[in-house]
Structures are given as structure tokens and as C-alpha cells.
Amino acid sequence: MSHKSLAIFVLACSLSAVFAARSCYLCNSYTDYDHTACVDPMSPYPAVNYTICGDSYLCTRVSYITQKQYVVSRGCDPAGNTCNNIYNTLRGYYPDISSFNCYTCGVNYCNGVSGLYHAAEIKNEDEKEYENGNIV
Image (tube, rainbow, N blue to C red; front, side, top):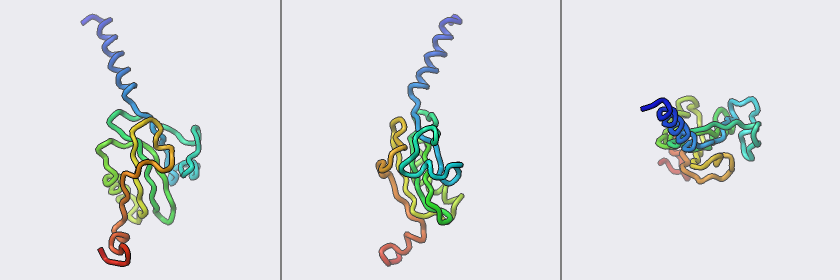
């Protein structure tokens, strides 16, 4: 393979990776300097950053309560990283997590809107035990 052919091949591979990428908003109302930029309605860029994710990733919008604070987090996660996995990871950091909602979507900047498709709502163990006044 000549140097010219190799250069064209490398360029083609690079371009295919760029075109397969997905852009998602990236923020966290709990850890970001501006704690209000990520909550709904979300502040526009540049108040909220964005990230470029691979085609095997989905944009996510997660909300939950921890330490009596409502938190909204937006970003991208591997498509196989289900809302249950995200919940379990967060629960490891924040054992008091409650009112967890997880939304996923697959187009550029789709995690910037409120009311995304509701992929899953997971209740913490305390909430599960006393659903409708009954122990579950």
C-alpha cells in the first residue's frame, strides 16, 4: 500500500468515526459551578457544556434526590448501560437516592429538553417497601 493510499484510508476511517458520533449536553446540577444551569428548563450553551459520544452511546437525562437536593444530570452513557445500571452506580455514591428518573434518547442534543421518553423510573428500597401503604 502506498503512502497516499494509506493516508486516504486513515482519513476515511477518521471521518467515519466523526460522522457516527452523537453530541449530548453534559452537566450536573449537583457538582457544576452554576447549580441551576442543568435543571429544567436547561440554560443554553455556553452555560451548559456538551460532549461528543460514539455511535454506541445514548444521550441521557437523569434526575434524582440526594441529601435533600434535587439533582439533574445530562450526558452520554453506553447504550448497554441501562437505567438500572446508572441507578446502581449512583446508589453506590449516594445511598439516600430517591425519586430516580432516567431518560435516554439517540439523536444530537436530545437530552436538553424536558419530558424526554421515560425509559425507566426506579424507586429506592424504602419507597418499594411501602407502596400504596402496603409492604411490597
